[in-house]
Image (cartoon, rainbow, N blue to C red; front, side, top):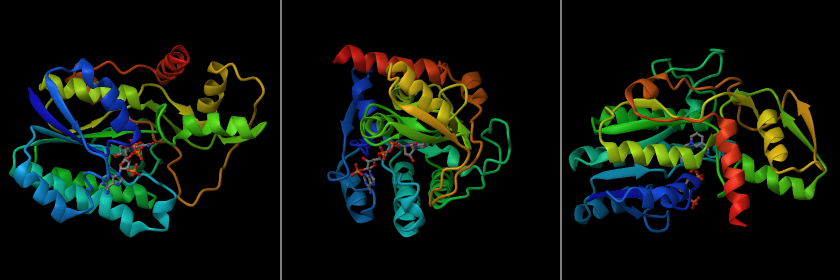
Length: 286
Ligand SMILES: NC(=O)c1ccc[n+]([C@@H]2O[C@H](COP(=O)([O-])OP(=O)(O)OC[C@H]3O[C@@H](n4cnc5c(N)ncnc54)[C@H](OP(=O)(O)O)[C@@H]3O)[C@@H](O)[C@H]2O)c1
């Protein structure tokens, strides 16, 4: 059985990996929350790996507050770059496979068609720039690593667009949602499942891969479908072409999944299919 450490275990992706883990009996997963394993504490991380060895480290820990990052860039860079570089160096030294996640926000959004793994990166906000440095550090470390770039992650856990819409619907009758950005909502349960499948199969070459749901949408389209599937007709959605935020965001950040579909044996459902499934699963659980 291969031993796998999952960092950031309280995050939405970490929790979705925990839910999917029982389908991969060949993997023995160990989950570490920020309180148990703070990736920012470089000395503690080094000390930890002196006495604990894993076959794979899945790094879901990240600084993910996109707007807040504009105000505290040092924190964002420390977690998303310095800590990642340190972890990658240890993975290289100890021959552990590193599975790392990055973002569509490494791109500036000007391409107007799906981004491939070889397109030049050019982030337009601090979060994207810190994640770009992180992925470059993983690559430069020489560790056996997967860098999975994903987009617009949501799930039943934590604070994300899906859970925010459901919360706001309880507080307001009208919601103004932007049509000014186009990307792909990605169900974190799908990302968790595909990541574990790839780790278990051991056949995908180490590289950068774009890994999101299929299709594309605006945040308005995403919100509309959330309320449609929840059969909530009380909420009125208004379109706005610009929603003011501290951080700029790419207007178009759809990721092309051709590489992973060509090389890997993966099924990536359309975002609408995965959203429907999440809502159906939640409704059947209550
Ligand atoms: N969310 C998105 O829309 C999105 C889009 C594209 C890519 N991604 C990437 O996908 C990955 C997973 O994101 P996610 O949505 O699951 O994020 P998330 O829900 O914000 O979870 C991140 C987790 O990392 C933990 N963390 C933060 N700093 C840490 C540290 N220094 N040491 C250890 N743990 C730390 C957080 O702890 P606390 O719970 O204590 O805060 C949180 O539990 C990240 O690499 C992210 O950059 C996310």
